[in-house]
Image 1 (cartoon, rainbow, N blue to C red):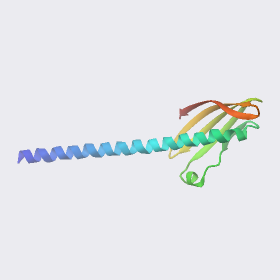
Image 2: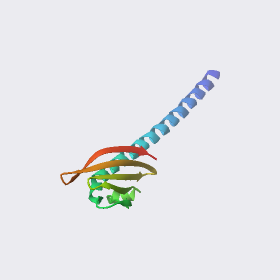
Image 3: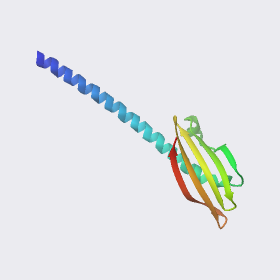
Image 4: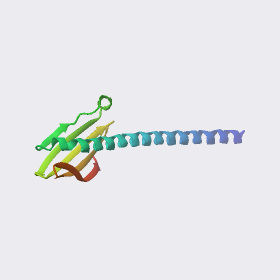
Length: 123
């Protein structure tokens, strides 16, 4: 009888540990999914940024597909023209309560803006 009670207790502890592990894995998966989407938003923003290099801009909302907007995604661009051939862009992406920022530097060579450096950072 005592052995059966101990066995039931052991099974209960194992089920509790399994539930905690499953919950932690689910949170990690959701976080990884959001981070991947944030990085994709920043890549898209880095591609769209040169179209806005005519002048300095602050906190311009870049257009996103409706599906992303419906999920609460935003992508904001700020531009600082350093010279006629150099510009810095700050991109800020938000998705599912998380956010990520990218600082990018572009150089104009032969009439085309080219990304020469980028640095990611979390908030």
